[in-house]
Amino acid sequence: MLLLATAGLGFGCLWLAWRADLHLRQIENRADGVVREVYGVTGRVRDLDRELKSRLPAAQVAVRRRLGRMRFEPEMPVLLALLTHPDAALVLTLPPSSAGCGPSLPGPEEESESLRAYLESRGKDVTMTLQQLNGLLDGSTRLLPKTAAGFVSVSSILRKATRQGPSLKNDAARE
Image (tube, rainbow, N blue to C red; front, top):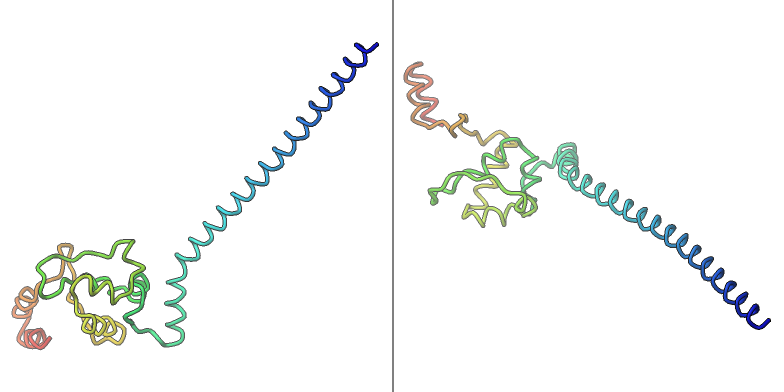
């Protein structure tokens, strides 16, 4: 009889352990589902954050245009400056007069830099470059026409002007 009672107790304990294991597996599955859902939400939040950050500069430009406050400022991020005017990249990539190197566009790591830091790292005069950039907005800065190889040289403009007549040559010489 003692043997039967011990065997019954043993089977009862095994059955309880099996039920506990079953419940633990169900709890684990629920916890895994919650974790997957949290990671999914986190991923969606991260995607929305990236999308918002990518749209923010364009929205800032649109607001500035509507308010009539379109100016290039030293603390403006390079990306915002590039979105402010289509020719801003041309002004920013012009090599400084002291350097003999060619133009280089700002990289992704430099787009969040301020204009001042970007220009100073390139050895450019911040004040003069900001005047040129702001001149793009008010029409006082004119860039030379661009070809596939780069900017058209002044001598080729003068040669073209001499072929077209003296009035164009004088206009080109004044510019």
